[in-house]
Image (cartoon, rainbow, N blue to C red):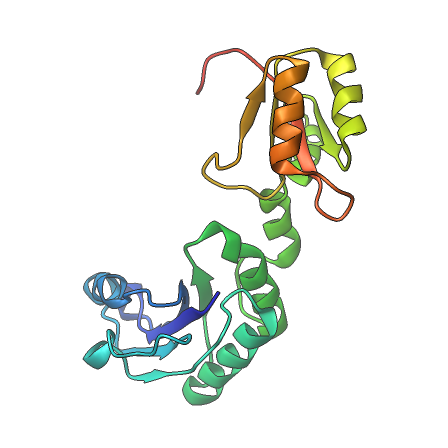
Length: 212
């Protein structure tokens, strides 16, 4: 949805750093801005906002650039280039929401800004991809299946048995995560998550053990 991109110049140990921060539309940037000021002597602060405007920001910013969609890489790049033009450089380009990490990484790649790149961002946002990376590195992970249709989940259950856990591949905070202990519950989860080839879901074996 609509978003806010804000920027600041400052950093630790009085080293000048230009920061661009991305927020959802209507987000109040003042608490974060004040934290940056206390931590690193922030000297400048710019904002690019979505459709809700900048009235809540007021004197807390030094400039702004409007974006209509904070998830749109192209709009983030345009905003980033505007800050680069005004400041001469941008050292950091980041946001706090998990779903923003891939578009932010892609924007960093295109802007030539240091930070997590698009490939790494996809490695931790896509749960299936993340577990493949961990498995190749020798880290034990639960067995999993990328489910593009109900038959995929049924085949996986035949392999690992119940219970299984179903979830979006790019979910967050355990939202839409379902444990299925039977075929009836599995069908209910599939009806809720509605996997399809262009929007697959993750199905994992249920592992019992201690958390570390």
